[in-house]
Length: 539
Image (cartoon, rainbow, N blue to C red):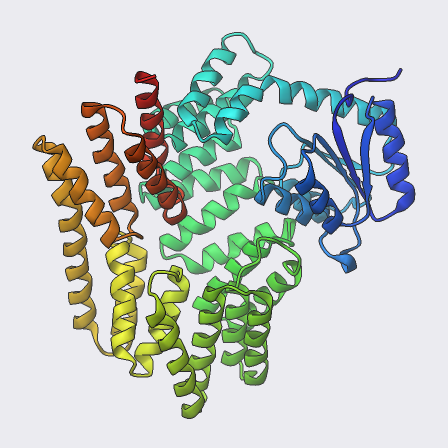
């Protein structure tokens, strides 16, 4: 019987085989679709999604010789926010291998259908997924707007009558509570769920709370228990590896990632993390293999980063393959056009030349890195800055190295892992006390700038408090805590004196900057919600 499930929906069919595109198009027509675009490559699909909103995507097998595969297409479409939660995305593949299926499911399509596909199967899946999308429509909208408290409220309202989706609603509510900063409430929810039924998302949720609280032993126990219950829950492997690494158990963390990669070997970032752990242990051959795999599977991935290239270059150098190490760094510069990638490539190449006793080449690159750094300390990310500082201090460009590290510390004065890396650079250069003094001075400077405004606000001097925090924000534009405290003080001012559109916009800009600096900070959503509540009061 003909269905109207796809009526008035924009549909895409992506497959490298024309006959399959035609077959899937005809099935969609039987489901009521009239607007259907047929495409043979991921590049064409991305262009189409950028040109119109898409409601249904049937993504089949793609020839990797022409670019991305189906997994990478979904990954990039989500990364670029070309498909929202209301879009139905189905993978339609002939790949029956466990690693192929697991790899696709990591990117969370709505369904994975094995070829050949029948019209009855397609129609049944479309109807079930569409009903679910409709049921979660309002909640998904709130999540997209990062209005996590509203999402929690909607979950509670829906749970009162929707028993079919009760488990999914609890899962979403737990995630939203954690994102909204209501950690205690999230913990209670996860524990209540687990008292009734062992569910991986609830166990992992508890583990993540312990991880954030730096209780790594408890986090490890939760993640291990999750994997024991469901060995296919890959998210738990990644978090377990992180917790083990923080707990100093590098070899064990490496083994966990290796286990995950046996099930889903085509994760670019997981392969790179495996390489980093192997390199830390001095297993340069293992690191080299992992970095090579990361580069190979990530060739067309939007998630690829310079990390694997830098890691491969260092690993090759450590095993005597110096010519290849420098070739990898040249490739890095071709693959990435960012200033961060260029700085990392030059800094790493300079360190390799230094280790190879090619002083002239190392010094020439040190001069180039010095010039790049002194144009602006502020535009480089943490990893690029640390690598550049390490190289500069090793080649006696001390002033630039110290200036770069000072900028890093004063803008991240409470980031303990970063501070440890900074101290390590000074210690490695035989300047341990200088590093200790610099870190202490920067922490004092940041705290003084931040606390001045907060203390003024507590004393009721709100205008002076906003001015002080604005000065701190200008002086430390990369310090997430300073930005968040500026918004906090601004909200106190707005609550007392009434809505000031300019100050509200300034606060929103500060929150957006904070999301880029510390995207996981729970205070961001709390403050964003307070801004919305404040505006509602004065409407």
